[in-house]
Length: 202
Image 1 (cartoon, rainbow, N blue to C red):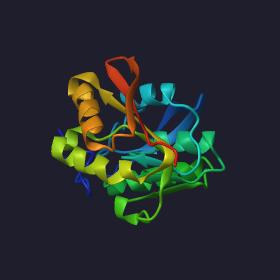
Image 2 (cartoon, helix red, strand yellow):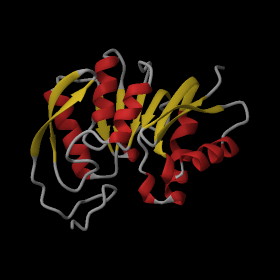
Image 3 (cartoon, rainbow, N blue to C red):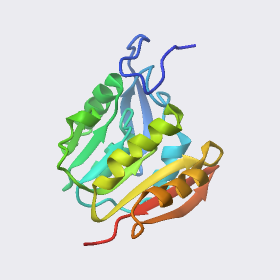
């Protein structure tokens, strides 16, 4: 058993790359993955559910916890005129997401650590399969760092497994975010819930 968590900054396991085939945005793509990151064997069920239900992204886009890049790559293909920012704390994930974006010719994807993103940037769309297993306190801190950076009229779409606290997270978001923001459950599929946070237009 690997001692790594996908939220380790520097995975200790060997960086042995492998090429896998996955369906992204309706097309089978070849991407690189490796041990020590989230879902190295393919597209995880939660991300697949999220991508099934989200509308086409718009404006400046953010992927929180990008892994090897499936959400950011899909967003970049669907909205080629947009800037897509993909963030992760895992150095191996960052490198793989960059490689995969380059291999697919997606030059509108910027990948880095959370600290690499200009603090003045605001996002019209946020897509995320958030890292639930980092623990509730750390997850709450993460969401309160990024969700307030939605631009007026912006939307955040997140997928959370029901038995990992999706309903309690929805309730917490309602309590924490400004009262004029909406937090709604948009879909339930395969033991996952898709939540949408919307900031009102200015």
